Length: 515
Image (tube, rainbow, N blue to C red):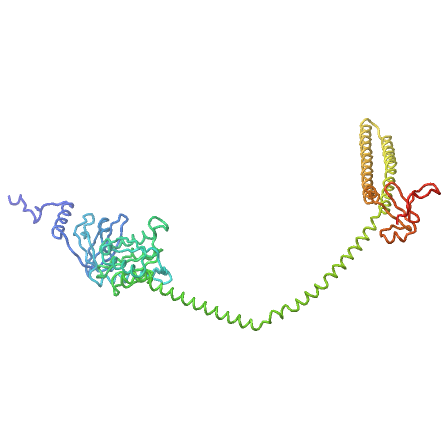
């Protein structure tokens, strides 16, 4: 029987496991043995997936531990792992059966000591400096006297009280406080959002836009101040369009925001002193400037007054300046009456010469000449018009004799009618011109009669002539042997000093002598 039944080989009766059973058993053992662990090592390869998960390695001199932080865990990490960083990672050890490997699910990660933090800080500083964020050329000057100051800090700490107290002492200004966490995992994102929020405010809005921003925090360890070393805070400060003062920690503390801010203050109180001048100092300076201006104005007026006095001594006396002009005025004043008399006589002579040209005889001759011209033109107009009409008629007759046909005869007739109309218009125009000249001649005749002395005789005046000349003076009338007096209706001769009517010879005089 022993030959019929073979003894089983060692291990042939062992239980057969499936791959999933083995993977699950290993998972239970590892997770049960290492429920929550803290692992120290250097961060190796870092990979951020599109889903938001973060994959990285933690290694030492001989081994590598694959690590992962899920999307929700990444958001809660206070420090993001960077290659080469010495860290202490806290999490749970688990397995990934699909690839037959184990890995650490990291829930929290912190730098392994101050040295690691400083190394990471130096690495960030070099990267940001290479981008030019620390250049002095890009930093803006602070406003001399800002109207509104925005403060990014904790509302419950002593920092904000120190800043407000210092501002109130130096120069009271409007202050807007943006409350933030100044340490911990919420510090960096809240500070970055506060800086960006102040910059998004519009000028003249319901909430005024600050003219200056102060980011302040009290002193602490490097771990406490680490939120101000985050890259997000540094980039938000560098992108701020509003000038920014960093006042994080004490004078010996240095954070990354200090390098990108427009001005660094050693303490929050010093930031308030940088933000505004001392009001009393400004008033004293203004009073001093006013006193200096008053002294300068007084001194300048005195110098100009002395200069004016010196120039006044060099000027001649007023009597010397106006003496010659006064003498010339007296001389011209003496000559003025004689000059006026001379001018009057000259104007009178010119008037007499012009009046001589307007004598009735001259006007009568001009009127006669114009009348003869008009009569000659009137006498020539009718023969000229008849002659022109006959010439045109002969021309038309010759043209009509050469032309035949009803159309040509009609054209001849039309031209004849047009010619007759032109002759009629020409005759009417000539008659109108003659009538106009006659009216003008009549007007000149009336003017001549109006300027003549006979119109004056009709108003009751008389003309006395003696020795063939007009007598205008009494003495000349007394010397005349005989006088002739002309009235409007006739002339009366006076002989032997007594007037006589012109009548028959030998009639005795009616009256005695007029003289």
